Length: 333
Ligand code: NAI
Image 1 (cartoon, rainbow, N blue to C red):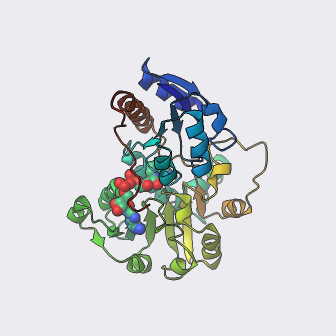
Image 2 (image 1 turned 45 degrees about the vertical axis):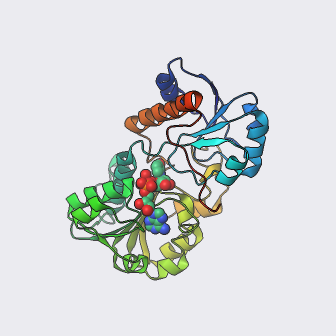
Image 3 (image 1 turned 90 degrees about the vertical axis):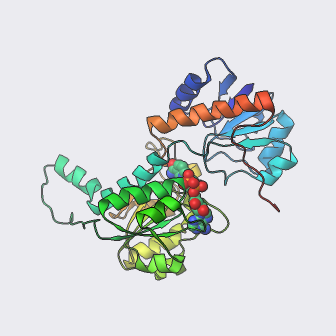
């Protein structure tokens, strides 16, 4: 099939080419998919998209006019796709439901340890010949209460890792995970998790229910000095409320791999210009905030799996008219 790959970085083309062999005709486009760039998909049956590509109703209508029949997402999350519009246009949507939950879970824990042991500050100090320890005081994770919001594939691995650290684990998820229960994870109401946790880590998808799950009201109920980790989706956290929480001291530290308005920032080199987003720029000024640019998924194992599953989705669609991992339109939508 003819496949238009959007938001292509050199590593995307490398892994996709390897997984594809000669199976499909891949064309790589650097721009993000948007209404302006959708014309690039003219004559392609498949569009291959990533997390910050725009797949709202207008773009889907344009893709339909261009002859697209399949949107093959290189991500697990599909919150950026208007599934109802895709169904109306008879465009199938496929995703990569699991590539390496270990990659994301390990990144969540990396952010916890970086913040707690102040690795980001220690690294710079030692390079400048400053071996003073003032300001680097951390705490033992052992014995601390960690609240995990969402115990699917990723959250369950976070639980397993932190169990090894000797943490007391709370979780909130409408679906209890048997592996987590076996580890001794206690499922509690969200309010309870907010009130009791020393560390809160967000591992849930972005849905209407989780949009701004962490807002001013939620922050007001948290333990003073709580550490917040978000490797899920930016819009699960209200960034303005987060800044207020940091300024008041209720939030003790923050590790983010995702940001609500990351579409205009992440995956690009903006080092020769300035950051226009004042909320993001303010977040960067806190010494107790560590931000990575949506890199939690970015391991060799995950990139290999993403490319292989994406090609398998396209091959199955070409052969059977349905991808291996379709994203269904939600009931009643
Ligand atoms: P999953 O579908 O296996 O697990 C998600 C869990 O969240 C499920 O158990 C579900 O019941 C739960 N959940 C749904 N609504 C909830 C709510 N309101 N409160 C609490 N829990 C809720 O998904 P997986 O693979 O664990 O991924 C989770 C999310 O992580 C993805 O949806 C995606 O947004 C994000 N992600 C981020 C990456 C990154 O590079 N930063 C890479 C991959 C995923």
